[in-house]
Each structure stands twice: as structure tokens, then as C-alpha cells.
Length: 561
Image 1 (cartoon, one colour):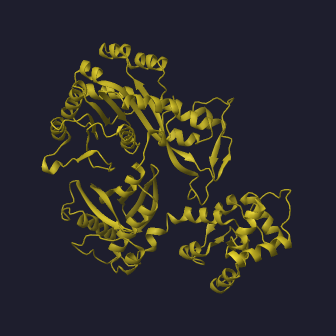
Image 2 (image 1 turned 180 degrees about the vertical axis):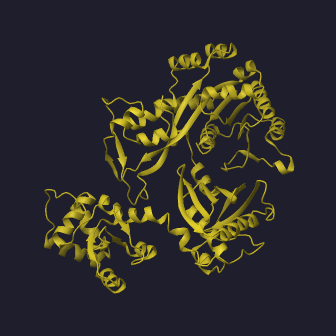
Image 3 (image 1 turned 30 degrees about the vertical axis):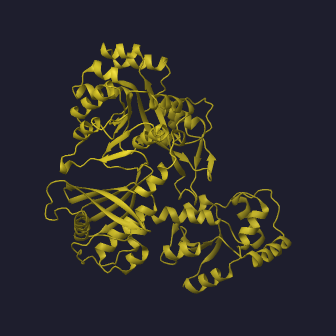
């Protein structure tokens, strides 16, 4: 068990502790916090100083992560409430780690509550919070589930309110599990919930910052079926149909705001899986308020080019990338900047994710016959200046969008492709006339979202030679390699926030002629690179060079060139 390295550092004096106690009595702030702010030392160094003067052994974050939690001695909920954790080392000794050695009530509570011998250890509160965050993924949804699995779902009840109080008062195991899963996903700011039926029960996963995290496993095939049935009921789907995919929607309210869930049910060999896409319109609207292109993380060169494309009088600006890569956010950033009240701006989307003032937004409703193609035709009769098409999915929509761009409208839209050059093949596959396509297109943006190192816990790192070579980077380089080790601010992940990287192709006459002549993609890439196009991998590598993210992260989202 490694303790922090003993550093040359000043000792905390008895006089400083007395002064902190007096200040605490006056301001009601914790003595530990007053001392730390007064010392001005880094958190790890301050904790070592405090342990030395009060004769407590100290754990740093690395030492904490090597030990297993003992939630049977101090439960997860109690640990989170009291900011202390019980751990077991390899010798099965019980260790209680706490962050505030001046909290006598906490120490008395632990002495009374823990019914076995233990040893006290000191750690920084933020390290304790990070440790709990790492382990809450396997605890939270299950905390709300009663041990029995024989309850049946209640039919026909729409989920109206999500709160800890309503979850606690719920008597049905199934309803409680569904509610707590939705509640936890919203609190963790997940974008999707995956409910996967396996041979022994249900696996619950959340997609957070683009990465799928396994949260818990619920034992019992019957319970798994009942949970999926409950999702079907609140989504108004056919509960008896288990052989074909189904799509639906439902709403919940949490803290007074409505949140939409888009539901996809898919049959599998063990039963059915469900994926719930979370659409928190209020949160998205708050993000969109004042949303600008320079708030998305693009570099200055890409922002300047995007603004040029967004302010064009006519033509088409295409954004491409996989689901969840921020395409819609980029288009709304562009619309927010050009929305000066002098143009008629109309959007057609599935669904409308952001709500912007002064913009006519039309939701697709395929059940009623309002498709992208039909809506786009109607939009053209509504005297628009700028049009946003949520996604080009079929040849009919592609043809109408291109004709709109050729007849004096600025069209902003998205299409699914891997990079800017794959877009060309995608439209050719749809049967679009190549000459009309290149005449209409002003520029194509391919983008990805990359997780950024947490600024609160980032440290220098030295990747091994194998990782460097596998990432296409030489052993001799000028990179400032850094990584986040995990803290309370980043929920133990080491990453906090995401940044967009761009591959931007501006079509000039030379490129248009080569595309119409069906030149090989390799030739188009060479010309584009000479004209200033920077590929996705280059943009991602620059983030690593500047210490903003890790090699593992850019290898996750981009191909090694």
C-alpha cells in the first residue's frame, strides 16, 4: 500500500489550527477547508501535511483506487452523505477513510456504526468523491430495487414525475427500477439509456460523453421482460408484440421541467432490448441561448471558414459525422449567428431538439405523412431565405435540397458519412446528378467530439513506445502528453467536457471540375490538402500535442492515418 511521497514542506502549526477553529466558529465553515485555503498548498500536499500533524496515515488517489469498497460496513448512500468510505485491503483488514479529521461527530458516528475493528486513514474530500463516483455506476439504479423480482408492472400509467420522493414511495419493483434508471441517467447527463436483455437478466448502460458505461446488472429474466414491458406501456407501444422492432416516445417531468424520451425496442435472442434517447429540451434551449460557433471548441481557422459558409447568400453547407457527433449543434450555432431578424429561417427536423426565437421550426411526423421531402416542398412555398434540413436520408430529399440551393436559398443540412469525401459517394449512390451537386455545395464539414482532460486533475504522462507507434507518432516528438487521473470534478473519469474537431472542405472551381471528372479520391484529397483542408486525424493529434486530450481518446474517435 503506497503512501504519498514525503516532500519537503512546512508543518501546520498549533497556532494555525487554533486560528482556523476560531474562524470556523465565526463563519461556520469547516476547519479543514479554512486551513487548506489559508495554506494555499496543492490538495495532495495539504492532506499529507494534515496527516503528519494529526498522526493519521494518508491515502492519495492512486492508493484509494487500488482498494475495494466495503459497502457492507458503510453503505454507498452513507458514504456519500458522510464523505467517508470503508475499504478492504488484500489482507481483509477494514480501513475507514475520511476527509475531515476535525469533524468529531463523524468520528463518533463511525465508531458507533461500524461493528468491527478498523483503522483510520485520511484522504482529500475530492479524492473520496472521485472514488465514490467510480463505484456509483454499479450502485445507483440497484439501490432502488427491492430484492424480490416477482412484482408485475402497472398498466396504463404515464410517468408524470421523477423525484427521489416519488421513487421511494413507489411499491412496484419494476416501476421503481424504471423510474430510478431514468432519474439517474438525467442526473449523470447521459444522452442514451441502453436496457439489454441477457441470458440471466437485464444490463443497464448509459452513454455519457459519447462513451457507453455499464451501470448495473439486474438478475432475473422475468424482471427484465417486465421492465421492457413497462417501457412499452409508457411509450404507448404494443406490449404483446415481441417479434418486430417498435418505436415510440414518452415524457417525464423532473424538477418542474419536461424531458422527452425517444424509444427504440428491438427483438433479440434473449427477448427484447430497449434504447432510450434523452431529449432534454430545456437544457438544450439553455445551451442554445447565445450559442455561437466559437463556443463549440473548433479552432480559429475552422470557425472563420464556417462563418464564411454560413453567411453565403445561397448554396448548401453540409455537416457530416456519426450519430452524436454534434452535427445539429453546429448547425444551430451557425443559425444563431446569422439570425439577425432580416431573413426568414425555417427548419425541418426529426425531432426539433433546440428551440430558437425567430425561427420557424417544423417537426417531422411520418405517421401523419409529414416527411422531410414533403415538408421541404412546403417550406419552399413559404418564402424562406435560409433553410435547415435536419438530415438528408433519401434521394427525394437530396434532390429537393439541391434544387433549393440552386434557386437562391441557403441550405444547411446534415448527412451520415465518415468524412468529407465519403459525402460525394453518398450523394452519387442516391442518384443525384453530380454536376448539380457540386454546383450547389459551398462546403462540407466532417466533425467528431473528443473528450477533454479534466483541468482539475490533469497530470503529465509518458505513453509507452507501443502506443506511440500504434498511434502513428514517432518516439522523438515535441508533444505535451497529459492525462486526467480522475477527481470529484470529473466524476472519476479523467475527462471533463468535449471539444469538436473539424475536417472542412471548401469547394473551389478546381475541386468541382475534378469531382465531375470522377477523379480518384486520393487525387481529391491531395488537392484539398494543398488548398488548406486539415483532416480529422490531424486536428485530433493537435489536441494531444497541446495536452488537451489523450492518445487513447483520439484513437477511439479517429483512424490512425
